[in-house]
Image 1 (cartoon, rainbow, N blue to C red):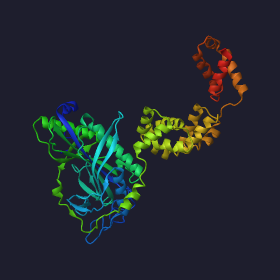
Image 2 (image 1 turned 120 degrees about the horizontal axis):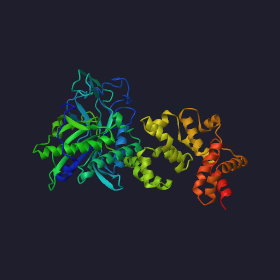
Image 3 (image 1 turned 180 degrees about the horizontal axis):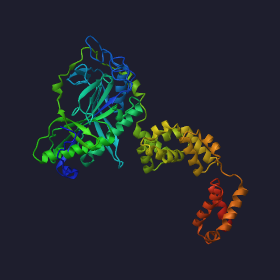
Image 4 (image 1 turned 90 degrees about the vertical axis):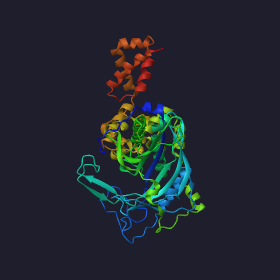
Length: 507
């Protein structure tokens, strides 16, 4: 089926009237180890194709695998963070299927004996409520290679003239985290799916086990979805939308599949158990291949690897390395910083939590850190279509420099208007805040007599406005302050100017 084929759909409201959605989310996470799961090959992203391979990850005859200890430790830490039980004894299995990017014609994975099982993750939703996602298992496996389809317009095999395979990714350590069927989500199913993947990404980042860059494929989600007619308990036939690689797409894929399934069932048709491809540009899924069941993979224990049997002492030692859970940390920081719910939500949505945290730790006030990062810096990042962290790295703006900028204001050297000019100079590569301020000659006038003279001149030149202030219309003083700032080329202290004006014009 081509990417342009359009399946019948019904409206989302119609789906909810007649069906209950059931989801199962499978998230694959590439671990940030220096070497692959069963060999010593490097895992650097973006290397020259087929430059990071060896007989083991190419599946050559006689090559024997060795388990990556760091990957096993990461898997245990992930399981613990997801409130899972950790197996005292587990082993790898061979998952047999043919795919061009599978060099061995089987994947070394785990089947009925995963490293972690029976866990949960509490997910915060937009309205402040919490949804508990039950985790069935988290198991270790290896990634496949990557097929590159050349000559077509979509990058998929349909329409391509030929295909190439890069095996650099083959053998990279993966953790697959599988939820239990998520029922009762109703109309919030797409939102819950997105929130779960976002919460999982935050948790994995806090654990420092993966860079979780969805756009690079180091974290990707398979969305399993089926519909149950209202009033029944029997699970419907599921489809599996593969390798969805953004939070927004996870939400959209769930919604689209609900509407597609609903149209099939309304028309008396049968949902096909299959894998499907997600198309970001059109927001639809298309058929991939008929979905196999576990029996079709002919799992059997991997004969070349010994079982994994972590001691209880090892597990408890790894438990001691777990960081503060991200949701708990956010609530603590919000309390420490004194941010309102909306302010904290804006900080999180803008991806500014870590930058503001580092800036506060470096000496800034929470309000000041939020003001500068979410203001001019965020505006420029948005204009450049990158996140703030990326923009900051590219333009060498650091938490320490934001602290320095704030101190120039609190010390009385700069006002906010001047500070914005200084920040622009820093972002344009002119140096540190102090260097930019010195080079541009930015300095508040400290001579009170000069400020008073300017105030007197402005009052005399704007007698009508001055009279309004005398008559009790204090807000009219703003116009006079503006004139004073203009007369002193923006280098006056607006607060002092206001105090002088009111002292001269009000009893």
